[in-house]
Length: 217
Length: 217
DNA sequence: CACGATCACTTGACAGCGTTAAGTGAACCT
DNA sequence: AGGTTCACTTAACGCTGTCAAGTGATCGTG
Image 1 (tube, rainbow over the protein chains, first blue to last red):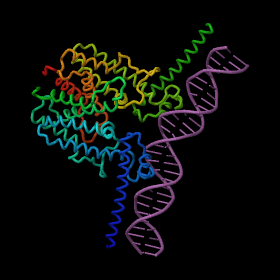
Image 2 (cartoon, chains in turn purple, red, yellow, brown):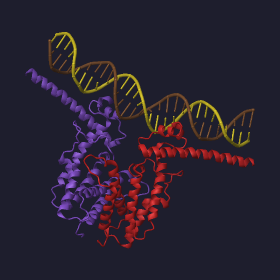
Image 3 (cartoon, rainbow over the protein chains, first blue to last red):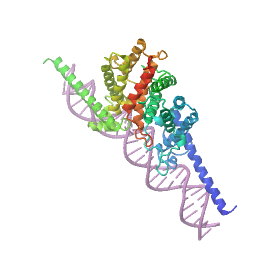
Image 4 (cartoon, rainbow over the protein chains, first blue to last red):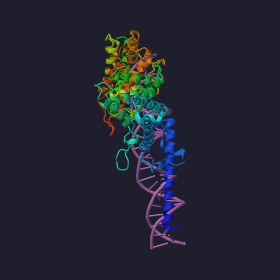
């Protein structure tokens, strides 16, 4: 083994070890965020879970928010992939409906992630080292939604007054998001009997789509 | 002046003074909550604003949450009154539409209040001294909504499969809430161009109602 | 081999938070 | 005049996120 080979090998090991503790921090943080909530999870608790001191975390992440954002990015990616799978469906209206239901499943299956993905405004949104916003187009769920409603508009399936793709997209997204987030924050309300959010979303999608089509059925 | 008259007079003055500082705390808290947000507002800041020490607040409110809830109650009342005014409209469908728009106006005109009314889960919901939930029926906005959709169902204006009033109510409420809350948390998002939420809500109400009516127009 | 540098990590602290036990002093009733 | 009440203060507690300074193993180089 040459000296340079040893050098690179040891360097690689150092970097691998650093990456490992970084990942350990992420794993511990994710677990605590999910079980206790983001706000209630302390840097000290995350550190204790992996046997480090709290300050060790700051060698891997600028602050608590950066840690949250990092986990957020992974979640956006997996949500985007769930949307991507549905992209195959030919009919843009049926695809829109299915995307809505898949989005709802994602939210209800990952409530804690959903909370900090869509129910909080993160201070520094996901920026990479160059300061550019990180979103690979393959994973951009909103992009998929926008494209799906655009296809519908171009095909002329929607009523003529519904020609603004962003408005249509935000109507659908917002509508579903509202049912989900209201459920998350208020399902225990003593005076309101909440219906199963999946059912309500389904009903909403049907009503909203039916009311948006040119040929009302 | 009799002694008993003096007694009651001084007692009344004491109580009035206590009520005044209590109100001063509420006013200061409201102002800071609105300008800085609930989370960012500290008990110390509220106290400083009215020239007291932080601990003084605890003689009037059990904790910070109780302070928030107290303000919340006033806001629920004024939202309820806004809904009540619309109650006169005869046609339950048009009334529903107008309630949606009024709700949206309330939310966008009082963003900070809306945030902690509907976008956070309060630990101890509004309970009075007897432990009963405080909501005078005249001010229960959700009750008005429920009644309005119920009237529509009874009149037979909605499609037969939409016969569950709570589901219908939560569909409408959730849908509007989603557009509003998404706007609040994400309107500054660098990659998403948000449409005016009032417009989007209007479009949604139209589409949702059209898609829910028995006689699709 | 020895020496200085690197760097992941620790120590010990800081300021700020919500909250509380104990104390103070003016107004009150007897 | 003396005792009680009570709105309010003082001083602290334990908690948080965060950081400056230090440590020690590992490393490249004379």
